[in-house]
Image (cartoon, rainbow, N blue to C red; front, side, top):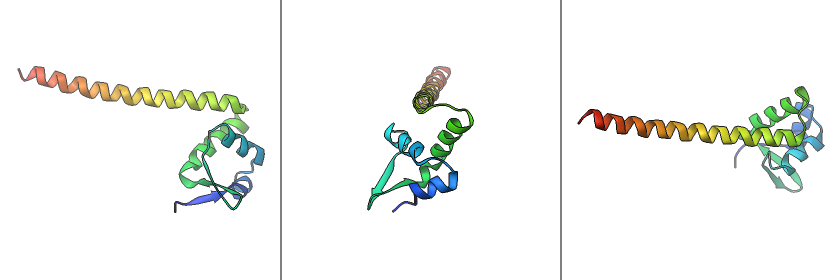
Length: 100
């Protein structure tokens, strides 16, 4: 089993409202596992929680805003990956034509 931390511990450690955490889950921004009525966040998802917490509390961005920003950043990362793939293909094609 992967390492995980309970919602209750996260609320104490990060000093956040439990409703904030639950809203992040409801909006699909965080994935949790539930066992014996206890919600757990995987350690690998802690950076996302920290990012959303900073945006929400420090920048005062509401939950729908977090969702929009998160979606846009994911799309941007996907486009950057596609761009790298296309550039690699273009370089390979260029190299082939240089050998002719």
